Image (cartoon, rainbow, N blue to C red; front, side, top):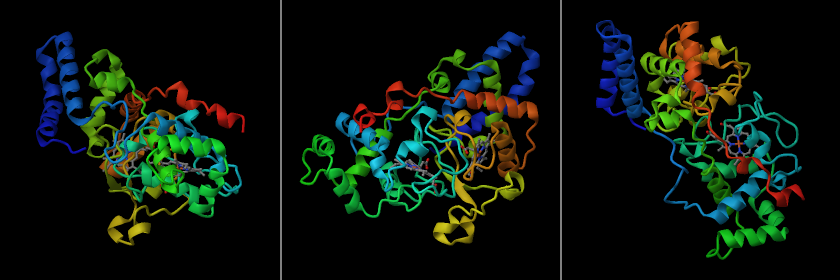
Length: 352
Ligand code: HEC
Ligand code: HEC
């Protein structure tokens, strides 16, 4: 996720030189040159998605994926039976519920916007404040969270699932060498294995792999502006973000522009450090077209407005309406393909 200094330098150089180059060449050669340099620079900053988010510690198997998918969709994982993971991270709507805040198991609302689970396994850490180190650790949180799924204890859920014959078989198949396959830890591990397969290749990936025609002219211009104004200080790498934490509001308090109704101070709530005030994960921008509303509190509905706010709060720049529209065009090239298979609830649950 680190920017290589040389790439970054040549990128800045290219962006500066590109303006003057054009006059001395015919438009078409200039366009070809623009295209080529843009791609090389983009390839230095972003990477195409691999097929899955592999982990050496947690090898993915077909059995774990099948079990994980079933658990992901199962409302038995909540106390009242109202919520599954899919309630707030609906795979038919890009892994989100499109609400500012999500409705918990007993009908109460949480205090943060649900981020998408798609490609989340690539993020440097999970949650807006990074309090879980990976998807394995993260999956244990919502189940016991008193608002979200409200299961009283790990043992309570283990017992509840052990009463379902289907699960005892599936856990045995997924964790064949475990003495106690149906454990809370293995619930987490299998859900996470499923999440590690939720990868959504998009036109931008084809572009990064060398297909210049994968982006429209507007999207290429948007990409150029995205790099030029400095969005890449925080939104780079395989996720086009998701790789680091930053203060939301480096130049302007975000609340003055988002009109947020909650006073969320991000990482400071965890660490009590003043330097962590308003520090949040710089979101991955994959599928951002579809994951509205935006920001940790879902305070902004419109992507173009979110882009303009970012320009002001993070870079102290007034992005023009035209430039913001082009950036949005580029961001739309990050909308990926969610495989039909994952969008369908497992048949065994549909009959429950
Ligand atoms: C009631 C709604 C709700 C339910 C149910 C729920 N989540 Fe979430 N999820 C959220 C919210 C809200 C956040 C952000 C919370 C925060 O950052 O403090 C979140 C964060 C996450 C993240 C972090 C993504 C990132 O990029 O940081 C993942 C992964 C995730 N949830 C997966 C799951 C899984 C797996 C389940 C089922 C075991 C689940 N969630 C159940 C609402 C929900
Ligand atoms: C210095 C770091 C930094 C820079 C530069 C930056 N961002 Fe962000 N970006 C963040 C952080 C942090 C968040 C999460 C803010 C929050 O909701 O708490 C974010 C969130 C976003 C979101 C909302 C994503 C979502 O799912 O809610 C969009 C869209 C976005 N950035 C686009 C941009 C664009 C476009 C630029 C350039 C104009 C840019 N950002 C520049 C750090 C940065």
